[in-house]
Length: 116
Image (tube, rainbow, N blue to C red; front, side, top):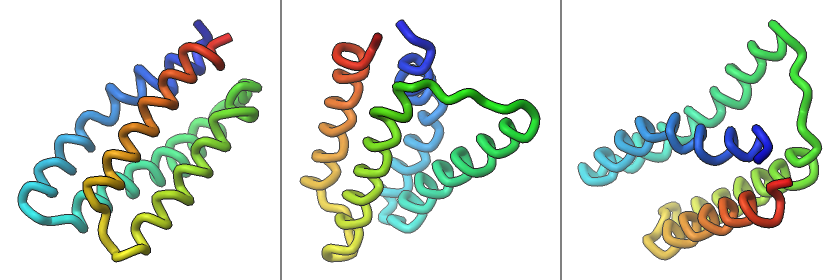
């Protein structure tokens, strides 16, 4: 199994559990701004801050799978989330379910179709 698949699924879930717990608590307390801001802020910082510092210290090779599959999934998901947040300015249960189902499909594709 390629390291990219492990990093994009198992490691990502493990490192995102703190954000998930904070967002769930914020949602239960009806602080949607904290929930959405926590996730978006964490992802933006990881993408720009952590990846940027890592690339400054050591140039990072990008696996072909990321260029062919994962970056397009990330772009598409970002556009879908943008659409969800601008229609009614709230993320409904149906939209949340669609996002979770989309992640399930992404993980399934990662381990079956795009694993090698």
